[in-house]
Amino acid sequence: PPEGTTISLLHSMQVVVETFTATGYGSDSPWQSPQMNVLVMLLDITGVGLFFLALPAVLLPLFKEALSPSLPTTVGEDLSDHVVVCADTTRAEAAIDELAANDVEYVLVVADRDRAADLSEDGYEIIHGDPEDIETLANANLPEARALVADVSDRVDASIVLTAKELVDDVEIISIVEDPDVASYHRLAGADHVLMPRQLLGRSLAEKITTGVSTDLGEDVHLGEDIEIAEIPVRQGSDLVGRSIVDSDLRERYGVNVIGTWVRGEFETPPPVEKPLERGTILLVVGSQAGLERLKEAAFSTIRRFRRGKTVLVGYGEVGQTVAEGLSEAEIPHTIVDRRDLDVVDVIGDATDPETLERAGIDRARSVVFALPDDTTTEFATLVVRDLDSSVEVIARAEKTRAVAKTYRAGADYVLSLATVSGRSIATRLIKGEEILSLGTNVEVVRTTAPELTGETLRETRVRERTGCTVVGIERDGEMVTDIDPDTEFRADDAVVIAGTDEGTNRFAELFG
Image (cartoon, rainbow, N blue to C red; front, side, top):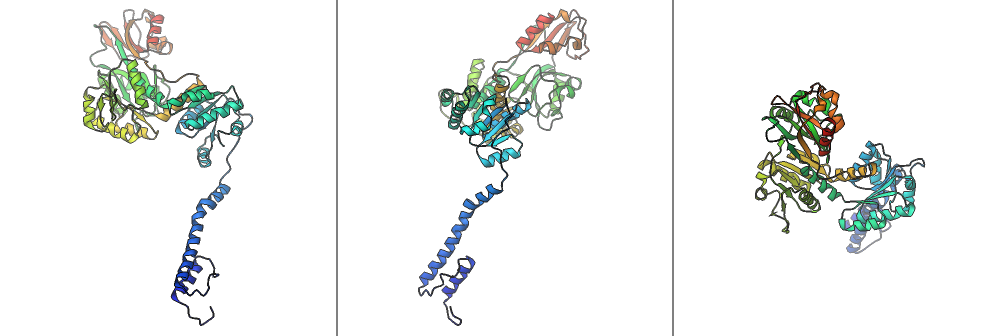
């Protein structure tokens, strides 16, 4: 307006709004109506507001993509005999870790750009692309690969299988399914192997129960009043973590013999004596009560002695059903607890309620298996069990890998994550061509004669290397000798007590009997 013109307060406010919103003064017309001045101000503010709302949704992604580092979309032509992994799950990362540990090359195909960038920064070999696109699989050099793993989702995996078969017909394909009902469709699409992670997890949890210790010593022969067989979990912070059985000098320091180990769902007997012990490893040991107590302190753990009783199975979903099937096959009595009123459920109630666990017979139980899908519930229920009974074995499922440590801290003796089991199963299928898990492996403690050992030392006979058995005692002159070192010499009238699998003890009898 011309100098000296009088304008209203509302008109002045309109000019101020136009100044701050940078909309200019083209609307500075001599509106006579206050309503029109207010309308113009609202339009100015709304227009600028919409612009700034659209900025992060439209412009910022464009700037981010322009400034972000480029991701590889193809592999080198010389890459062959590798594994093409089409996945976006922690299971894939566990499988890749196993492949890398066995010097098997791989390439991870990731569709999401941000996820691909994160994995690339973490050191994974990746290419960015849609795994359902034949061009992407060609860029991954699938025709020269040893196998393809599809683990995105049930429907996407089926599409990936079809795409792979369109590109190359003879490559081995492993497909991961969450819903067992769709497994047949994946086989129809062309998958060579269909893995169901929750069933694998259930089988592994059941195996921890079905892998037992049996003794065949005879009524008149005993290991000794203070000699026991027990399981001792190795906890975080223990002096044993990171040290092998040989380096730990368990026999010399504690007077115990390790006859087997549980590590991430796999039981090994004889144990790998040169391999560093991990947190969560369970040692199956035989020794004196005093030695076991000293080892317990070194492992920051508790001694779980074998006792009779049922197994309490908490949770009857897909994992729980598989556990129950494994227990039934092994003829191990069990009580099923679930919140649902199902025909097979023995006790209906909440796993975190002490009264529910007491009704299930927790005080008389040999083991408790938590097959619950919620990690928080499992952790709390583990605390409840430990408050009720400190000696019962607690075996737990973890849905997420990060929950494993917390469940151990809550008091569980054995925790296995879904990602670990399925990842290792995938890797074992690719490396060894067979399943990783099997039910019913038993450790036997047997008294036998061994005349072929006469005059030789334990070191010279190499019993463990040749048979897989561990000598845990020698009956000599009516007494049981358990303080055995590599230089112990066998006598003609000795009876030997050994621990090992049925196959191992038979092999011992063939060689030294």
